[in-house]
Image (cartoon, rainbow, N blue to C red; front, side, top):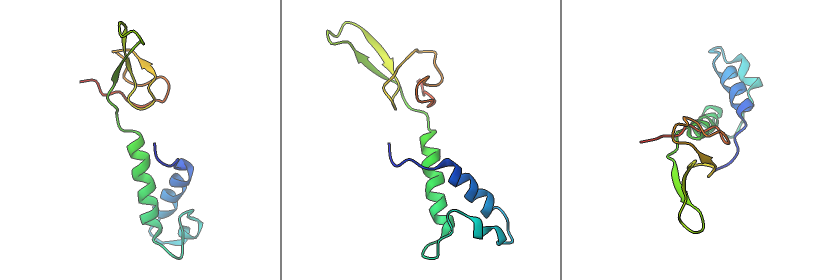
Length: 96
């Protein structure tokens, strides 16, 4: 995975920037004289959304190759065929 995004920072930034009068922008954690705060915040929002995308399960086998099981495509934890989410990392599982 990429950088760890501060979810609370994103939420605070969205709340500050959702006011059209601009007064709350002084409290925005993305407020930066050198760059556009909405562009910086948008990149973090997109990264958080990517972290929520469903992952395809993968197949792994034991050392001898006789036993196979499904694992989460994100964290490699064993999952069951009827799991909708990985019980370890919480990502949605995209079964096909």
